[in-house]
Length: 262
Image (cartoon, rainbow, N blue to C red; front, side, top):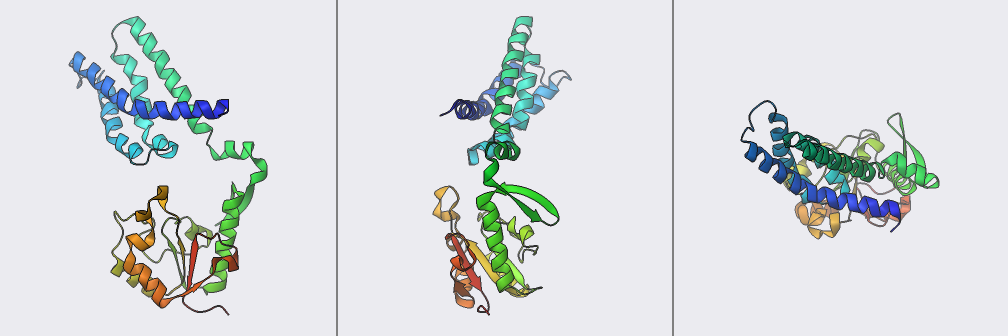
């Protein structure tokens, strides 16, 4: 590892440890003071409880993105911990530790900021126009968006529906088409049942469906055929399956068109 990657890895690992250590330390300090409800202790108590509640989100898929989204109450709790210490030296030491945690957190998160990525790899980014906004994206993502647009333009007339599943809801904005169903990100927890999904595709006159076959974290259970077998059978029965390479789509796409090309 280079020094930046090593420090980032250290910071991420420390962040997951702190998600457990900080609420425990805060709860112990509050219990020793016995005044969790007084005005001085209330902010720390609130931060400790909120950190504990949000920790499950980070551990549900332990990567930097989920840690960053769950760590906001953790940062508050870490900054407030020194206020629960009585000895002046302990407060100063706690403040120094809290400052170090904030610095490590900033290093870990900011190093993955899209602008930082573009500065490090300026030749690997492309401009993409989406609904009047200009975005800089990695070249591979820009090429994928362009291929999706080509496929939709070739297979769906104006007013006809487009179905994108299971894990690419942002592409609806790229092709400027609404989702034909309520479910946008298919994980099987709050998805609509297959019957309602099929009814939505029929009601919206869906002409083309683009299905990605990659499994989240390598889990086959997250793929559409496993999550929604009846919907997948419907697509294969009622639509024509076409080769994704015709539009330059990556091989992990499956293309379904209600009407043949031309």
